[in-house]
Image 1 (cartoon, rainbow, N blue to C red):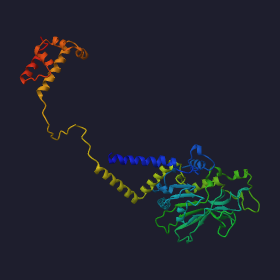
Image 2 (cartoon, rainbow, N blue to C red):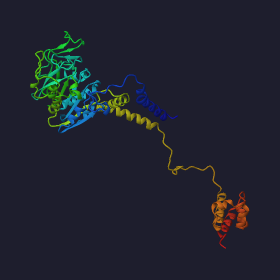
Image 3 (cartoon, rainbow, N blue to C red):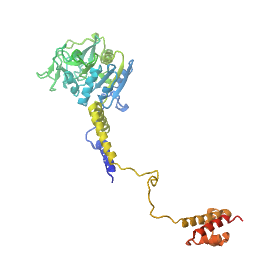
Image 4 (cartoon, rainbow, N blue to C red):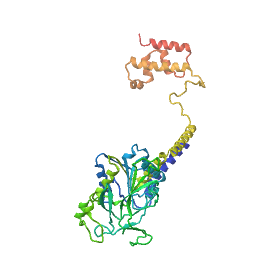
Length: 448
């Protein structure tokens, strides 16, 4: 078997094992589909973002897109200032190349919203001096009788909102730089009360090791253009320590809270006054975020690549992600191109030229024949065939009728001794003169 066929067979077997057989025998259950902006029809439930995606898509001058491979495509965005990248529920860590491209995107004026409650976004947030605690945040201000739904005020556009969250975590701003001289500028949009704390050991009690008091929940970070010279004014990244405010089940407004029995002013143990919430609640806040970041409209891109895929599609998406990352870096893309060219060069050098398919023999070359054919034998054979053809035509016979005649019948019909001998004596050798005479006889036969 040729080397090329072996390599092709190995490649085919590798693809089958990697993309079909491997996922079939992989262990573990299919991942839970949640926090998707574009879920399939049979996957829609209270924990998806399709209602929010439709809400954003219905806004004026807003175009909604999605990412399924890698956020590295943000590198090619032509108008970063008019583009908003949204990642809700980070279930796959960012790669170093992805973090670098998102940073460049913000420096060019791009807008980013990252909502997480598990700590997987730290690879990105740490670059801005922000850390997701990962543990659950508790507060004395919570929704109805369920402490798992803390409520927190948020201020945006000078409007106050009361947000209802579901087991959020908290944010830690680890940057102690001078606001005027530091690389980043911070803006607190929402935080817990003085009694809020992050339960790091999950015992639902305040311990010395727990973070407590005014836990940041929503924090905006932007570059200080006086310090970072290559940054463009307007680029922002907003970190949100909760994913639920975007989900279908939690897109609630103030009037819905009141209808559910949540009174405007609660008892003295809580500090919530819904009449102060001129902006509204979750539904109004997540829409106001879009208007705040894209006041003149633009493109909203939902990142679906941060969620785990099914067994069969995971391998394909991982391959696309790796290819996207490799081609996004000029140096890595150049090395990959050089490697492909070298492989193609080796294949071309080792490949043999195909035989000429236009001619059986190359007419540009001289090939001496091993022997010359006997032209007299060929001429006699042609004469014999011409005799039979003329016999058939003179007697109006078909090919089948001619073949059905016996040798005696054929000789009776010809009636010429020399021509009959030509037909019957297939072994006789004729001289050139005899061939010439037979040719003349055959021409004259049947004309009389």
